[in-house]
Picture 1 (tube, one colour):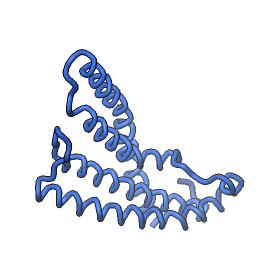
Picture 2 (cartoon, rainbow, N blue to C red):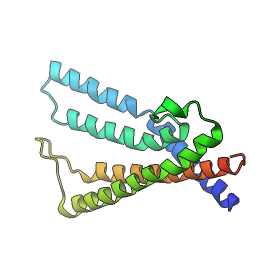
Picture 3 (cartoon, rainbow, N blue to C red):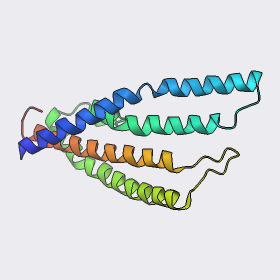
Length: 168
């Protein structure tokens, strides 16, 4: 079983690290969109697509970067008691509380898949003047939530290995 746990951790961490390192550069995409928005409003006619495109880029940036953030331990944590605990105690609490995250992500993924399927089936569009299709960003959201779910399970497996006193 530990061989399976290690393989799962290694594969999921590698995939999320590669995607997370790539998506980090999405900040430059958002900057370019905002610069174009400013330039077009100042010198030309304002673009209809800039605000929504920036929102879509930001959603992709956060949702696809989330699993890498969890992997690095950069997620927000209530450190009132946690910081003073031993590594074993932290692993115990994390192994227990990760189930809440896994449940939440499972429900979120279920809803996201349902919403994406509706969007694809009926050609759902935004209600703004630009009216882009919503299915591309919904697919990205489903994929990001799925990766976050895989990373949460990876973190659970890491906690199990820590509790057993094994090196990860």
